[in-house]
Image 1 (tube, rainbow, N blue to C red):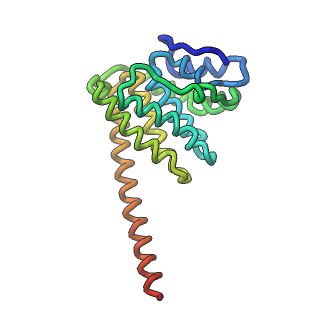
Image 2 (tube, rainbow, N blue to C red; image 1 turned 45 degrees about the vertical axis):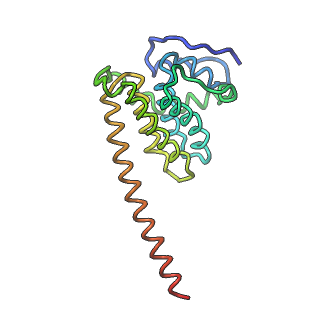
Image 3 (cartoon, rainbow, N blue to C red; image 1 turned 30 degrees about the vertical axis):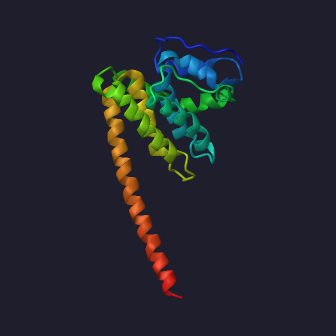
Length: 211
């Protein structure tokens, strides 16, 4: 596995992930991804893991594996890390490069469309305070993402990806969309919890009434 160092990169995110997939080595190490994203590390990795979770999150167990680095990245946002850090055991984790190419092929077209529309704006949404709040939101979303709930990864993954894209592009409008989606998802979870708790309570009262 090669050594990794962080560099600035002027390529678009979609070009970076495509170039990484085009390399000849059969294994793709996480450290290679982080190095490829350079100074955009925090946002780029949230976007990457969020999108990959959307694509392959239906496979049992993958949300837990993908959730660990998302959680670590989010915590570094909360505690204001200067540079994205990952432990060596995560950097040495690898996936098959052909599988990676298949996964990113499913998201490349819509990703490029969004990139063309994106631009730096609403700088208040990418301020230091905003980054801390985004980190807290991503921690909560990640904990939900890691729960063994069929289909439960979709919306948290999309929201994490939106926050990551907004941070990477310094696009406050995308982050506003992420916050609106977070609020909507929170209302959905609350309503679902209310419904389930009432059903469970009614079932319990019915069952205890039989004895």
